[in-house]
Amino acid sequence: MKVLFATSEIAPWVKTGGLGDVAAALPPALRRNGIDVRVLVPRYPALRQAFPDDKAPVVAKLGDFGAGFAASVLRQATAPDGTPLLLLDCPAYFDRSGNPYLGPEGRDWLDNHLRFGLLSRVAAWLGSDASDLPWQPQVVHCNDWQTGLAPAYLALLPGARARSLLTIHNLAFQGLFGAQTLAELGLPATAWSMHGVEYYGYLSFLKAGLHYADAITTVSPSYAAEIQTDAEGMGMAGLLRDRADRLSGILNGIDTVAWNPVRDPHLPHAYDADHLPEKRKNKAALQAEVGLKVRDDVPLLGVVSRLTHQKGLDLLPAVAPQIAALPAQLVVLGSGEKALEAEFRELAELHPGQFAVRIGFDEGLAHRIEAGADVFLMPSRFEPCGLNQMYSLRYGTPPVVRATGGLADTVIDGVNGFVFKDATAEALLAAIERAAAAWRNKKVWRAIQADGMRRDVGWAEPALEYAALYEKLAQ
Image (cartoon, rainbow, N blue to C red; front, side, top):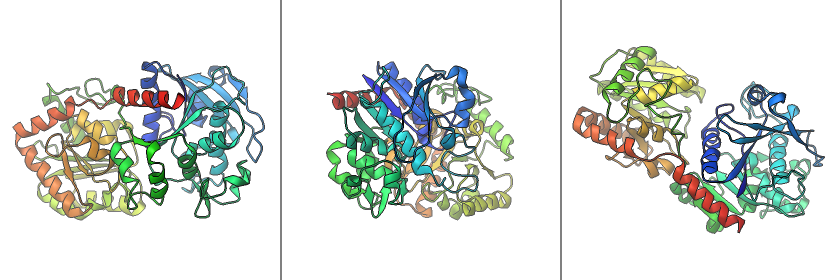
């Protein structure tokens, strides 16, 4: 089975969210199951630095795809874990600093439709008989809107083609562009309809993928059900209901090598379920690192997240006085909405030694928060899958989560964490209070920790589910 995994991100080189982690971990897991998978990703500066020309030879000079696409070539490289990479080298589009989607001022690049249209077009080219490369995939596995046009190109262009699969990592990001981009992207005029790429007067990359893909997956079973409802479907529930026979949810896994408290190089003290006193040492080290009072007699709550409305982090400042009065400590790592960043900075100033806030992202500190916190907070309003709750389970840090998406699929209230239903500050506080009460009962707490640390949250089972889906598509 030959599969092309097309993605706009791949950790550790390019990552803005869970997609980067999935692109780094799922393909190697698939390869362990005998699938010949290759990852197509733009050659951003970090990948250019990691794989210079002498380590990434050109395997194809990409022809004229028409429309307004810039010239490009395809390079071949190998990731440290042995996964073959196909690097789309187009300096005019991808040799830019910072976020792959945003310019220095924080706004979308004006040519994102061409940048990710080209990525989609090349994915479709590789999956068609137009490609003259000896390796040709039977399935093109696309991810989110950035590769959403690939199923459309495969369906609309002539010639034999691979089957297509689109995975939705977050339905909220839909890749919307003006109607004039249809011609720029080399799509036929017939594609401009509600049964095509048109979406309320815009061209939507994601809608195109949802309409034309041979199969659709989401990153958790609960999210697959939620997005078919008008309340959670982000305007696309009708289309998803119409394609329900091709839609399924496969729960993400996590990289259990990178996220392993026994061998985590970011931690000052290694530990496992049988050596939890070492976890307390990580707590003390974390408290000292972020400027909290070093105390073992109060629970330490941890947050590593984008500070956004979606993640429910706006609920936390509203109950900060009650958290301080429990008493409990809080450490927050993340960035996002400027007003929310300011609120968290203010909390740290109001509660020195009890609340600590680090705006930005630090991979090492993220690991140390997972290991050093007693409780991890994820009050998301919606969460397609979520990875941090699974990191938390593996690190013996019971999560407090809202019952949505992958959080509902992985956390069981009172068994391996704490679950609340309503997206309100009051419901969040009640769950935190229950967690703090359980933390004070060491026997109960050890049982909750042990249950989470026992669970298999790796990629072995999801990889088997994807392999079965690939086989079904390729028949």
